[in-house]
Length: 254
Length: 331
Image (cartoon, rainbow over all chains, first blue to last red; front, side, top):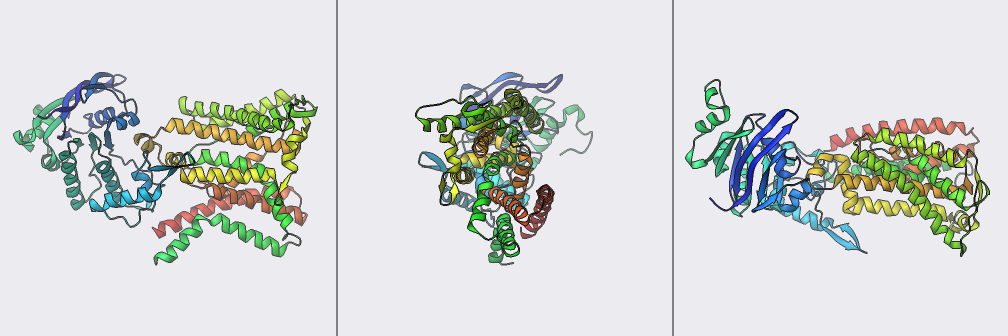
């Protein structure tokens, strides 16, 4: 395995008496794509929020690039180089595509010492980024509220590809995408990983996981139920891990 | 629809309140004798300066998706603080500074700081205690007005120092300096909202607070700044009010809040947050002022103003809904 980028060591999260995560340990290497699988309520999204700085763990520790790491806010995680695409879209529909693309890291130039938005520069970057990803949006100056679900998700995906960072967390990024866009999205993930960026992708769709991931980590009831290289496992074996072996065959899964 | 008509239509929708203002001015100029005079127009601008400044602060907070009901009382408190210190009659202490012009920046600073402090309290409670801004600022609306009554004992301060009064008297291009201050505020804050990352962030916070938080924008910090700004701007409105009335009374500015609300809504700011621009708010303020002036000129009882303002707010909200449907069809 390549050099570990992020190491999770017994990360746990309680909501009162409810243990959402009982102690998760696994690691992500540089340039590695890890698919995080698990049934609804297994704790995948909670885990992503903890890494991304949206939630604080109850116990456990994380090492990012070999150093103790705990993001107290998304801003800190971002500063450390962790990009996140959330399941529920994180766009401001009341502003245009360019504003959303650059949310929180606008390009500015100084005018009399005051930072002023450099709209032409930002528009150029967005145009380039979207074009290279093959996303068509009629006008970059339309407010996002007028765009379709697929176009919105494309903005978010292109955003992480453009800004990259060191680690990308994707929480069901293809939920609203069509077949062609999904294929392109998976290509994007491989392309990002080939630049040495670690990728964690949460998905429910087994073929997607097997198509894109180097390693598959299964979470069940708040613990890691399986951590295997993709080429050493099969969809059936993974489904057994997700449902728990005793329950295997209890119903149609996957 | 071809792109050209579409752009034209969008332009009209975005600036609807300006078209309404022009329309109203034209109608009044034709139908009301003596309305069409430079002096009348100057008067419309002059009469709207206090309300205009106050509306800026209110609009800022509403655009961020929150609420500040305290602006009116904050203005009164700032006016009273300036009045007590720099008035020479009534409860005024008649503080003198040398040179005299020093009283201008000092009194202005006092007004801004008093307003800023109340704004900071509002912002802190909204962000840290996570209470609804509506309730917190409603409380401030009440207790700050109470504070005005307490420190004034219900009495008034008169005869503001002439050096400060000078702002209300001195004219530049036909308008008193107080009106120019209001215009300058609109220009500055419009630029801040439209051209700086800070303004852009406020609009986005109003649109989707969770998204901005996830994107790493320091939402709480921005919110507190917005509340402090709203307070300080209300303080400036109070300073202008003290100049205009050459002092301060305990019930100074009562009712301004609702006019400010009317102006903000008519100006196209959505109470849901995230939508609206400050130039639109200024047009809303001027529209109200133009109608007030018309009512005065026609010799109608002043009590009619309130009825008309109420109807106008209602019309503005209906118009907003109508604009939404048109926009959806455009998209």
